[in-house]
Image (cartoon, rainbow, N blue to C red; front, side, top):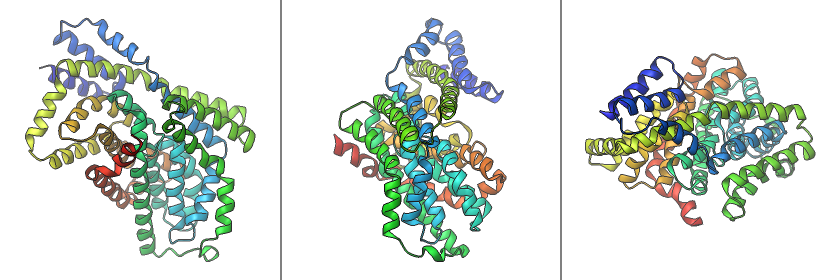
Length: 429
């Protein structure tokens, strides 16, 4: 009865266009009033407020602000030049440069849409100029941008760690190898697609120039040093992930304002306003989701759902496949942050019940939702790429189909090859 009221009211409210955060809070309130009448109504406000008194949660706005400062401070341009020196001489070199730069920038921004915006403004016009295809140029940028939520520091990984009570440091380590795998698979896919299309190598860059690589590496050294400082500090026990985020802000400011000398006061102001706007629309949702999760656990709804799914099939492989299919569908319709705060308390117990490590499941869950960045109708990265290229969403989504399949291949590997995600966390422990 409780689950029917909780989820029924939630879906009805979302269907009539009530904001997701408000829907979560109202559905919790409705369930308390009509089903769990022994719980004080004040519980919703108490849980929502006290849940935000979280030191790890502070890492989200800090990393977001640091990523925006890096983007404004000339980091993306230098990363592009270095990536171009490494792979620009290959067939489809510009597409590979895009993927590689997104991987570098992901280790700074922690956000998929931010990565697309920072890299796409340079690379989409450059690829279209080389006749890579109007749709493909935007599609590869949108798809590669999704790596931004896999490679640490990742904002969704921080949120999963907070909601699921999982070590954020271990989640960061677990995201490194899957992020690299996704990048390699996307680069191979781009090479095969563009070679089939007949794209030729630029005759002026038919081989790698070591001198040019070293020069661009030197120019990009401050950008490449950022993830080393952030992750090295965390795993060297110098500071916590939240403290690392604060250090990242200071580092981003020093590099952008005093070394690159491209970060102006008006840029800092715009970064503060953008961070505040995003967090203002996010934090209340996180708080209300904790109250939502409290009712879930009180009524033992996750255990009931877990028993149903596991009873549906005796195979752990099939159960994990069903979870992946469910999350891919959810990712196409629901924002990543909303999906994480609603579904983590429900799905994490199922994953642990079939013997999956919480850290691995965190990466798998976020990879599923990252695929939603390139899946209509939500497809946030598609909209960002469309805004940059001025191309219709339909043509970009069509061009993204082979890249979507490449992402599914990555998902299967990450889901079923546990050493890929657990090797580095186990090594650090």
